[in-house]
Amino acid sequence: MPDFSLPLLSGATRNLASFLEGKKGAVVVFWSGVCTHCVRYDDYLNRFDSDHPELSLVAIASRQGEGAEQLRSTAAGRGLRFPILHDADSKVAEQWYTQQTPRSFLIDAARVLLYRGAIDNFKFPQDPDYLAYLEPAIDAFLSGRPVARKETPSFGCAIRSVYYILPKPL
Image (cartoon, rainbow, N blue to C red; front, side):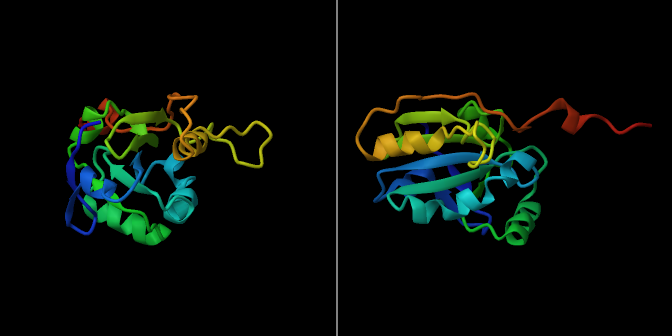
């Protein structure tokens, strides 16, 4: 997967390679502060570092129209502790062929793609129909087994849409 450099919400610029230093890999999640689907994963993403210390987590806010100040306010208001990079012009989302949030990518330390798609089937873990997609891929990767399901369809909020740029009524 291609490397990139983007500003953190704090303003410092980081590249993907810096998140991979000393790690076995990373999970990159295209994320949005206003996407209701992303809100559901706040706790999961906040605990990711403690659940998977051998991996980095990188969230990328690419949604059209979401400004840095709005993202900082959202992160503070929701108590988000994971790193959020701002892809203001959605170029990294385009480069990674991502059209909606949330969409996750599991890569190894050499940036080889192992899994991409949904985190789960958007049901709660206690639901009998719940299916995790990202966690089994992580477990397989970290235990040295091949990832069985390498891709799942994503769902969520559009990163770019003509509806975001419609002219105002006269």
